[in-house]
Length: 359
Image 1 (cartoon, helix red, strand yellow):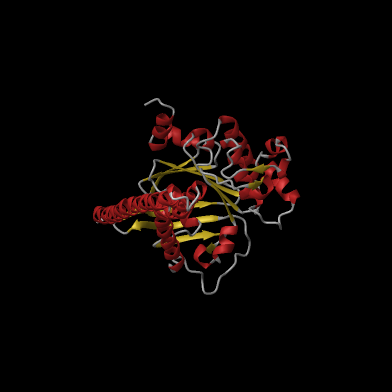
Image 2: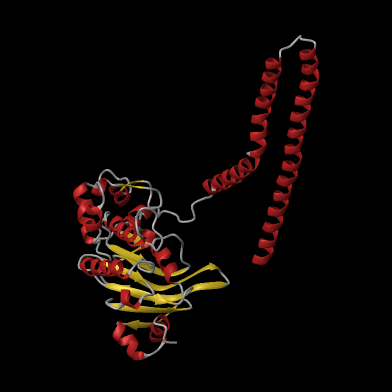
């Protein structure tokens, strides 16, 4: 089925591309022919007038310039044709997205937990992006307030899918996910996501000041809070070394910042909204050892006040976790501390051996 869809899309793309090429192949030479004919006629007619002294040579040259000026915008339009076609396709996709109905529905009567403390429970959760291919099967675990729990497993085992379900990016088929004793489907979506701080592997830094990047442009967050969360994330020292400190302007994508600095900013950004549950999805996978140590120190400090869920591959990132959950093909197959799982000598042990290059 997927191969058939891909074949149809490729065929449509081929036909559209060929149509563009044919139009461009006709339009551009036509413009060149018309331009050349116009200049040729002008030289023939104007040259005769110059010879008969009815027209000056300077006037003839000026008319040639006018003809070239007339055809230049038309050439520009033909050259911009491909850009216009791409823009039209993008516009159609944007309008299509805007016309789509919300898949994740708000509850008719949203509820609020008695106390927000980051108590997370998954009970027999199953999920599939396509019904024939389950991604999660009967997953259950609990993270108590203030605990640090790590999720590990091979690529495609379902770790990131769990995060997407907790954030309600997708609806799960069976089971329950509870945050602070309340099913997440009973939360107002905006309020649920405000309780969760998410730090991803790929950090987006937009053009603006450091303060604006941490607060996401929210003027309601005072500078004192920005300084405090940057200290908690161990980002304060490098920020103060920048010219202007929190007012330092960065370019889009944070091209002037290192990968580690961007991750520390992302952690500060997540903490700025005081979440009860902090999720780190491969946040240390592409940073240097020093930045990884700073993030680890932050997690240990924050765990006194916030619940933390870590998805990571590096053993050094997860060794200090209170509990490690090992996922394999959508199931939790092992759980325990780093020491306990290494003693078992099963999947977690082999994953560590592979990462250390011993196998």
